[in-house]
Length: 427
Ligand SMILES: Nc1ncnc2c1ncn2[C@@H]1O[C@H](COP(=O)(O)OP(=O)(O)O)[C@@H](O)[C@H]1O
Ligand SMILES: [Mg+2]
Image (tube, rainbow, N blue to C red):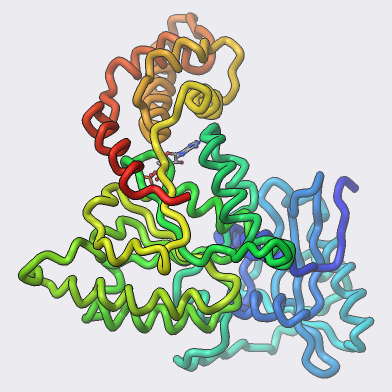
């Protein structure tokens, strides 16, 4: 077959969790929650991973309780279903279970699905008298429950590679942020202390959120976004922040993302603003030093308006780097256009680049969508006339979409951003 099956390794965690998470809607659930699966993986219970050309495409995991092994989950990426991969993974998993002195293997499926028949073929007997009862105790258990609690996401590792263009920013973030965190011992040999907190600033749509997610994906760390609006639901925002950071402190490794941080840490004007934001700014200021003391964690804040942040918040002791993320230059626009035109050779990329000065990646993504829609509608209208035309948007479609769009970023905003770089950037 076209895949390789190997034992689960620690560095597979993010990919395997992503597989489990992303295949849940495909009926590939089990009675074990994602949190339980993560907990089994991190406590080295038997698990195997199938890879095709270096990319994980399936995983099977189990846990052992005395002589009984429980198959917790077999997750197969959607493109690889129905090709016998589930059986192949099960066979390998069983081998590990037998080696762990298991004599009875159970697999409880939440409902009849495709796997049922496969299990009969694999020598399992369906136990018709078994009824599965479950009671969920509302307690805060170990880290795996915490991850679920905090809404942590494990992002696919190719996210970083999908950031098109923006080479200067990518390179800077890679050298200053990702590599010291990924190779802490090597960094320490050179006296480099891995960063604990960074702020990305720049106009809207330039890719700040994308970079934050990319860093988590690249490190294979869970991505936890703290949404002030959601925290505020818990009542007192400062107290909710404190409690979120306390839970985060229990995690082994994590990237914490706070978007639009100027909303929770604005310049402290006199008198205090309604809503007690001073209290929230003060709380965050107090929480960052504690956060910085632990290894394997990174706080990433993003803001469209660094000038409206409290200067105390931006002090060097709190944030290691304040990194500007601007609008893409010509080379970056070319890379982003190529991404969104899917590399179709008939599209005149230099023409699109020239016409889209000041466009952000978000603007380019939007214009590409408008052009694709125009092409689709033309195709629909052509039905019956026999004139099918070329599939996909043409250079003209893209140029028309660009002409219709107004870039988010104005020259005045660029001037402001340039001044902000001089006043605030630290990288
Ligand atoms: N370098 C890039 N290559 C391709 N698409 C990008 C890139 N940067 C951003 N995007 C896309 O642009 C949109 C806006 O990006 P986002 O990261 O949300 O911007 P910001 O957080 O700075 O407002 C997203 O849909 C994202 O996928
Ligand atoms: Mg954003």
